[in-house]
Image (cartoon, rainbow, N blue to C red; front, side, top):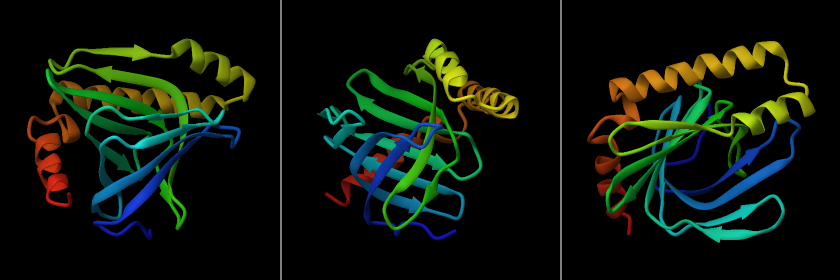
Length: 175
């Protein structure tokens, strides 16, 4: 799979199941790309919502995308530690325009002590009905939610103690 070059800046675009654009992040710096993974970083990045509203991220973040897992992970560096926001989503694809994925509403917020909250189950249920998600999609999403929570418990991948710090140090070399 072709992908963004390390050191390049890309857009990240999330969509809904029906193809509607959901959110766009500008200027994510690609720190690493393999066939299956993209690790990026941003700080005070402009974000555009589907309704045109804009906002700016508040803290540095390390973003982890995988081409085979149905989730992505954002590790945000805050004063009290690393907070994670995990989107249950399609695996990413990349074209010359942006890194893209479908956001399936379900989210997991992970705190520095590795406790977590599941978010937006009501929104997921509503969109599942509105957009007629197939039963197999529901099974895939919950199976990958289980994978994600195992990663949290095992402190695997982006949840390992050094992951975000290591990639943030790399990000600082580009500034």
